[in-house]
Length: 328
Ligand SMILES: [Mg+2]
Picture 1 (cartoon, rainbow, N blue to C red):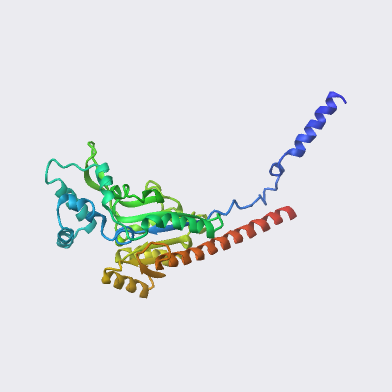
Picture 2 (picture 1 turned 60 degrees about the vertical axis):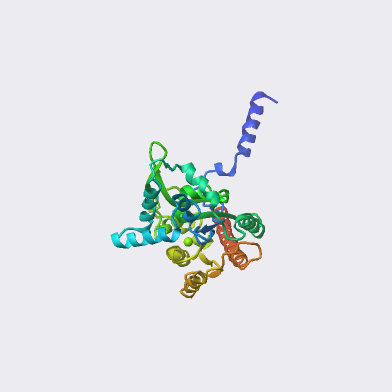
């Protein structure tokens, strides 16, 4: 065999080995094989105070440090907010600073707030809830569905960063302080209120989870990483109404939990249920086999079935687009 013949064979072999994609495709019908179906993530979004923990987080952390009775503190916040037409969240954040720094020797750093979190108490079962839910979704979704947990709280992020369950959350959105050049908290820098909580549901929905990313650009439903139908919002009261309403109206789900030891928290939940704000209500008991666990698992089954359905629709469309391309 001559050298020329050998190289001709090599060229022919190389051409034959070229992938299909390298073939010339008519411009008017480019390959439309949809990239892999990606709306396979479920988000469970939790309020914190009254939802995962019985009392507002300040009552376990900052208020004992100040030495003030929670009732007296919240009364002062409430009265000042009304008298001055202020946002109660801003009032509480400022009053906490003023009271902490009344004594000049007190300086509160980010680490101080975080360390205070160890005093936070949870409703029963909270600490084992997340591994349980993760395992449940893995099993029921045959490993094809993911679940991510988020907190959206009007409370304080610096405290939440120190909670024992921190590792289970993809993101924690909560109000934040500005820390000056000495690392001392001096001023609120981010405020999360009942209504602004909804912004963060859109961030999760559109995959724009960082505050530096704009969420105002239009994004087709099919391109949103976590559609509302894959979301479950869990909260405890009237402060969660905007988030519950948005979740429900957008095809998602909501659950209200109550403290079985405080009758009025159940009354609030019943009102939410009657107004159609939530799918279910249940005592805030996160242990396996609790009513809450059973209802969340039922919702998860429904969402997982929805994900499987949407994945099959996408596969069917992609399949037939591929066939059309071969036929043409
Ligand atoms: Mg709450």
